[in-house]
Amino acid sequence: MFEHVNFCVERIGAAAGPNAPPIASRGVNQVKNRLQALGLLDRAFANADDDALVGAVDALDDEHRDAFDQLVPDGADADAIRAAITRGRLDGTLESVALVLTDACLADCIEALGDHADHPSSDQLREVIPGLVEAHGLAITQLMLASTVAGEAPAAAIIRDLLKHDETVRLPPAEPRPISPMVQAPTVSDEERAAIKAKRKEMRKKKQDEARLRREQQARARKRD
Image 1: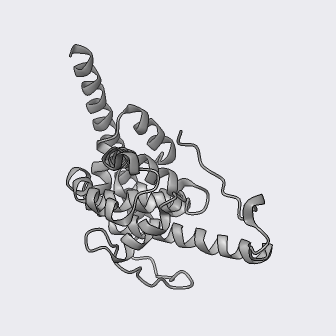
Image 2: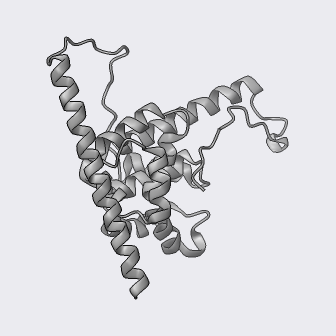
């Protein structure tokens, strides 16, 4: 369910028709659209604060948590999540993490849209968005919407417009990034850096153990019920 998806740049259908753009042009346009969709998803992650990301992880059921742990093996804190999606912008990890964290929000969205779930209008989406924000938070709702754009949902163009212009869910403009990495002199010694790394690893393990204990307690409670 949560396997990475390899996207083909040139998806040339027989229904393209005689007036379709040349193959090379279509390939360029598809790459451009793909990168724009990934950029939108990247912005949604950047806009989500650490508490929203960690809260989404804590709310996962066992199946989704197992999938998350495979995608983000270094822990469930915000730093580990951001490191994983930074490494995996183009190999599917970025989208897979978003899918896992927002699957419950997406399910609620589909249920709220009902018969309109496959091809919702802008007004229909605007009608259900406040309930999603109330239930899952603004950041996770934005992340879910951006994830559907990256997944090339039929309503991707409408959702992209909402994320750019809607007063409730629009994302802030992307911050400019340097073309090349900025080189900074180290501010701590190798020993201090190693100690910091060990402390972070210890904290990640503690959080993982606490989360595992909560899941086991919830599972036992469900069995008693």
